[in-house]
Image (tube, rainbow, N blue to C red):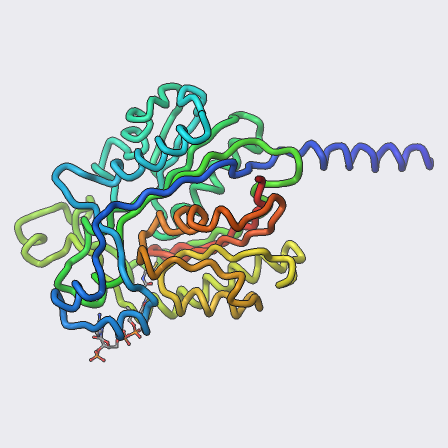
Length: 345
Ligand code: COA
């Protein structure tokens, strides 16, 4: 009996040790050179630096300028630089997922373009669209392929050229968004590090609060849709703000509770950079101090799928192996969620 119990325990521990988790083993960001400052926005629309900083925390954002430059340009830069610095052979990449709401084309997928450009010719690739939660959705989706043991190297890219769908005469949206990309390499980890748990949610009831009115199959582009400025981000800022505060903080609190994480256990919160006040509300709900909240919104604004990988990239030097990170996001759809991961290097 005693022997039986021991062997069961041993078996359990052995499996615990061997559980394959998907760990981030490298991260790289890319932002374009052009800096759109609040001072420049003051000259474009009726706004002030003081209003923008106090309401959002944003001081400047990057814009991708130039003919024929789409989201893939930034995704390629991030992915290429990641492969270079890790000396990874692109032919070893099994899968590339690109989270984006601003694909180069309706089809083919931006992920196809990125994989082709970096020479990931053995990978299958697809785009994933979940607005500002896109990176989290893609990270969790990719993790499943690692956890099953099916694949060994996956690139997840979060990239958006938000400037391509922003009306620069609309002061309520043009101050918020920017362009940028981040890429991570996911690999198997059997030391207990990597993605531990996730909470992903969505609710299509939020659709009319944050969306693009035309350009899809319901309302294809037309002379009228262009004249009516329907190919730009339309948002009810107050409604989005309210839901973002509620759901992003709820998801972050839920993941802590589910994993018995106290505020002390959390090394850092890596939040989607939508608005400094939304981030602060999430941190308050988690009960963590400002020193654990990673914020770079002042430099890049809201880059949609790019915010979380760009924020991890900016703060990479701070992370230690085994650190508990909570990632949290909210976006159009509505979509939202949180991920608990242990940093692997
Ligand atoms: N400069 C100056 N005034 C501005 C302005 C700007 N750039 N943008 C809007 N305003 C005005 C509004 O027109 C409004 O004027 P009114 O009272 O005369 O109508 C006033 O400021 C207050 O607007 P309000 O919407 O109450 O401001 P706010 O404090 O809620 O901040 C947002 C506005 C857009 C910054 C805020 O609602 C927000 O961040 N929402 C979430 C957006 C978001 O994160 N989207 C992406 C989600 S992933």
